[in-house]
Length: 187
Image 1 (tube, one colour):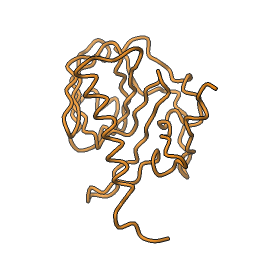
Image 2: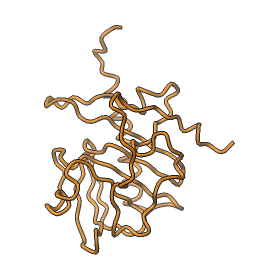
Image 3: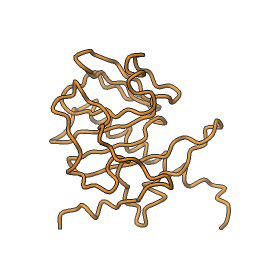
């Protein structure tokens, strides 16, 4: 196989992160349309992530937030976003760079993107499984949704306890299965 000097994997990942940026920017400006809402998982250890020491102690590696009813002051920039959420009745301000985002899922339309973690200290990014792993370019589901129907996504009753689902299946050691959204489309 030839060496990819252009790094299509990085370009594809940046383009798909642009989708997340645009969707969040629209939500910040106009609110969430219809029944759309977002599950966003991110690496809490990534450069630029800001959250309280309480939240970092509770989620030392990865966290999933839900933007649905109870969030405020969503601000989107070229490099990331800030949002206010309540956890256990305590308001928190989170700052999340787009480079830290590991997954984005909108269960209202069964749309999801999953991103590989940043590899190495040089800032190079591994390929996006949604773009690189899919035969037809259809995005893959987030890690917590692989192998399950999107309807099985546990939606929190309220956002005061928006957390990574505890019953999340363990990831296989050799990588995950790429699931096409066509599998879940109503025919």
